[in-house]
Length: 411
Image (cartoon, rainbow, N blue to C red; front, side, top):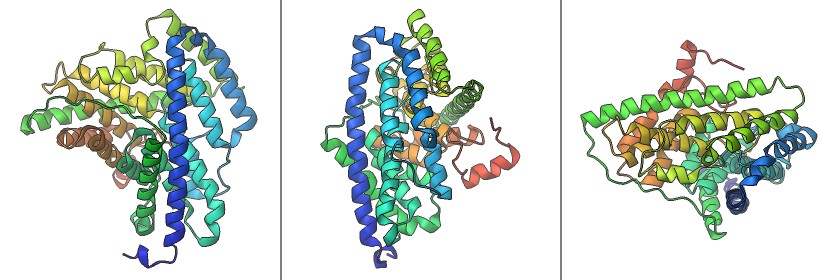
């Protein structure tokens, strides 16, 4: 291979080793602390009263110390595309602290954003070490994104493809980027497991044979999942636009925290706080409340739009799995299969990373469900609108053509 004839192979492999170990260790620490924060909140529901003050603290600490890293994943994507100054080392501790605090008081958020930002920030710090031996910065940041995603979800192949799709790593870079990104993802995954990091297992349940009717139902489900992904993306951006009208940044999550506190304590909605993993698992065997997916979507968009921190992916799993489970009452496919299809397809539509999502479907649910999950994920991606949840992401060739006819609305 061309790559193995290059003098840079040792620096790239060393970089993959360092990024993988650092990112996997950081993700393992994060997962342990996140479990602790979640269990503490469940044991002490009075912590919901802390939403306003915690929000104000998160807003203030970013306003005071984190102006240069406040854009999170989008900032990583922009640096990978356009270069410029190194990502501040403060990105990793700030996102770790603020995400844990968000979950401790019940904010509806995820965890992928935290892992990806920690991985990207740690990788960019190593760029200072490797710039003298011409290790490409975009490849190095791709290692960080891939390793963070792989470690936090236990899906190294999906992590590799997620880094490629989200950072738009083109074919011309594959000769040098694929191997080190793959190694970083696997090393991070193994490192996280060695530190005791645990990942949720999902039971797909019985399947049906793949046929022309089931193909049609998969396409129909994919349309529903794609529209839901568009709704999540549009709602989150609109929330961010509305909250941006509040002039003083720390005031945004304070006021948002007041509203969230009233919702969680005034209505029977505490099951929608945090990640909601228990509800995701339950959706594979029993049909939830018909509006559970929409409630989670709204609460997550509100939480993130107001300025709380975390990520979007696990809430998207919640939205997709519960919606798929509900749709199984109308679509003649097994409830577990529909939950798995929604789990992956809504994420595919929102992230605009369909290959990574399909790989994740195989890693989490195995090969038997691949035809259904793959078709619904691709359809969801195609109908989910011109832009995804990462506004800095460069569109694929397909989306570029679609954007020519359906311009994206910028808030």
